[in-house]
Length: 179
Image 1 (cartoon, rainbow, N blue to C red):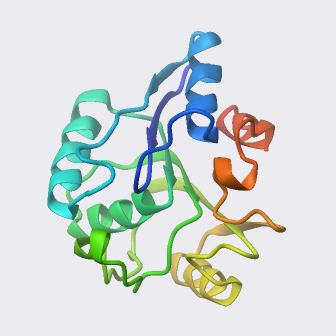
Image 2: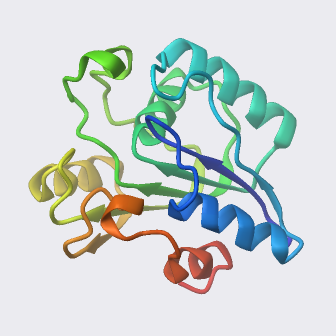
């Protein structure tokens, strides 16, 4: 695998047994290049701190592929709306929360407008029909606003370890361009 892959976790991180931790290991064991940084204060994040950290990562690592989970999608939308990032080849947006979520701990990230430009040549949105942070109708609205392909998983919750997503063979196929 020649692609450089950047994995961006959501609120609280995505440590083992989360699918992002599994994916990082799968990419690395096949001699792929992966960055899976722990963003500052993952349990008490602030938008400005995360934006600064990810902008530096994007400049330094220069990924071909970016995979966001949960709050990282909201972060990516803010970066896109700011317009100061380089375009990547492929972008995977997994389980974004609704754009007007109201939770005190992460309130600096909300409200966000869907970006007009995702800074990706190819992008896909992956949602669940029973995600506690975004309804199926909200996911369809977001998909239309972004103008990207969407994959909807049945009964997948927030598409995290708690909902059974440790090993996730589909996502490694997506990274390899096979899905």
